Length: 98
Image 1 (tube, helix red, strand yellow):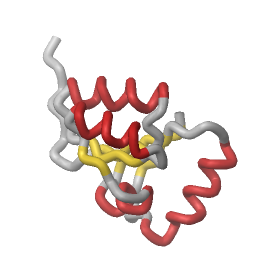
Image 2 (cartoon, one colour):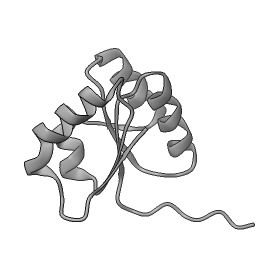
Image 3 (cartoon, one colour):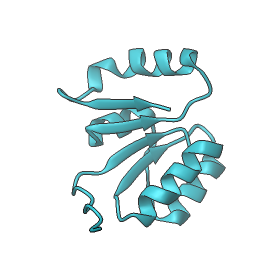
């Protein structure tokens, strides 16, 4: 079975904690370009060391990526982030909440 090739546009990943860091590792190992953000600078640095492209804010991830995976603690953080970032969302953007 042939593995599909990653698309050229980066995937976004917001939340690089326990689940998000594993997702980042697997996506990067699969050849995907991943732009990520976390409020914890140590997690962001670990993501950079894996080969990810750190963003300085969640809005920057939405600006760069049309497909964004959210790995946040609860629906409250997801709702707040999407509300705050609504103006920067690309038309047709896909947001996946884990």
